[in-house]
Figure 1 (cartoon, rainbow, N blue to C red):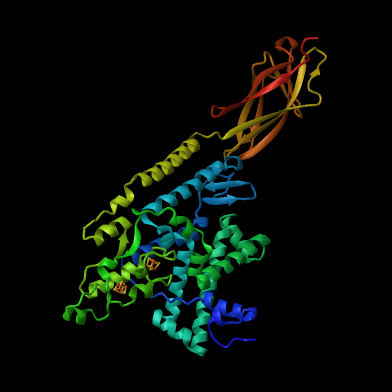
Figure 2: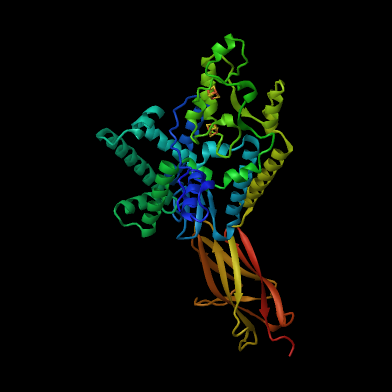
Length: 498
Ligand code: SF4
Ligand code: SF4
């Protein structure tokens, strides 16, 4: 039996399909397309600058060169996967130094806490890649299809030659930008000029093509089609940042105590002596919003605090001869005080409070600790493995001999000469296996730039030099002509008391 009314409550309880279809209609609302209007003002200018700087950094960084000598790549920023190395200008990070990367990630996290607790979702509104690329795609869209009203009209218009031409041009440029975005990413992982040549000659590794393909598709889809839905439905940050905001965090606020009651007929109502607020209900703040929300409805999860509505409303206020700031950056505590008629220009309070000091101090402490560790870190390391079979050998002259594999890691981008010697074993003699030379008190070892070299070494001592079955000693690796020295505490095995 099928119910003919539109009210889901009246649908026959046995007609499950009909109930589902009615419920869906009630619970699911299709996405409304957003056509943000162009706006000018202080925050829009700031966003243009941030966009230019962030895009410039992203696209240009792989092409910066940094001279590290003939033994290391000259790309300033390079994640060298093939050799497990990360280069950042004068810094070179080895896999065992990954804690520096972990430290940077922690700093980025704490920095985000600091920014959010002071200026709200400034990251989302200005520097998040999703925001920056959507802005870039919107520039193309406006250039080809016009501003908000023209785009709405074109969207509703039937398909014509003009509509096809504009849509094809827009999507073609979007795809080029998306490909450039994916292309720039792979240049961080190999020498950019070489990879670019190989890529264009279809001679690059397949992973380069697949990475560019995936990033092209995601950039095109996220910035061209999904836009605000990525922020609202896919990104966890809006939920997390809600826990970091408090009454002293700066957020974009509609001062309804000043704007309400809103009216499009303010002058007439004022002439009639009726109470009327400053909001002229022009909808300019809604028209420019890239998230399609009305800030006059209060704080909303969707708001990325891009402040474009502030620019739009300030422009309107200037035209109607009212003070700017009907929509403004304000803290919740300022809002309450302003509402109560107190003048509270206390933006500084958002920055100068215990919470931000703690975040800033934590952030700075990690940064200083990492900087000191970076300046003081060793560029030389040694590891020693004792031969297990046999543990020791007694030579014909009565000496006891042990075998070791000595691994010397030279973490500088130039070859170095080292001297290997023993401390703690009297009259120890060293022999390098495979070298036709006599036993000596020291051995010379040359290690290439950025190289781990393993050498097999025998150490022989007179039995009288041993304190017992096991004698501890230091294998010292000293850079010739001064420089770094490091050592390894090793064990010499002997027969002991017989
Ligand atoms: S409400 Fe204003 S600040 Fe929030 S996203 Fe929209 S334009 Fe940006
Ligand atoms: S732009 Fe300002 S005046 Fe216009 S509707 Fe928005 S809050 Fe009101």
